[in-house]
Image 1: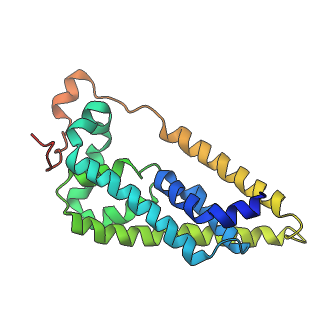
Image 2 (image 1 turned 30 degrees about the vertical axis):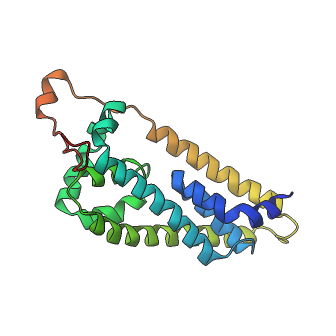
Image 3 (image 1 turned 120 degrees about the horizontal axis):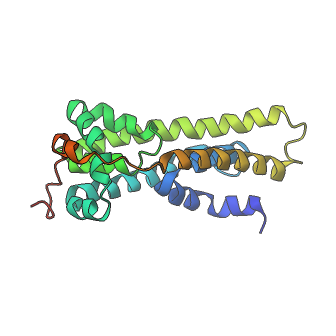
Length: 209
């Protein structure tokens, strides 16, 4: 089965899985596939939105009901969500919409919202707004990126495989640099500073003491 057939048969399902994990690169590539006619742009946006919503709500529920276990399994997580928690308390709606566009925030920030006092209904409303904006921006970027590539290729039908490889290569390089920046170690406070470090509240569910 060639690349075109794979995209046509598995494109939407693969997009849901990819956006559940970390999906900017996959959504850009899917937008380009829509430009080439292999996928439909509205379905690309819908499937990407579904994947992101599933990811956000998985992390939100973990923060709401399993915060103690998460902090025990990942000691650095408490420090990582301290700053997001402060921002959530000041303006939760804006924060929930904006975190979709902040690199490497797809896991940590929804957990922070779950640990906070934000109600599930409020999170749902603003998360839908943020996801709709995010999927529209990146899907259209992918669609326009495919159109821009067409300006440099005389016969795009003839060079489909080469163009797809170039797009995948560019996205992979960008993703690797992004991952490298994300995986920098979390700095723990000095022993004398621990008392001054804000301790985020834990979830209000069964795991809360």
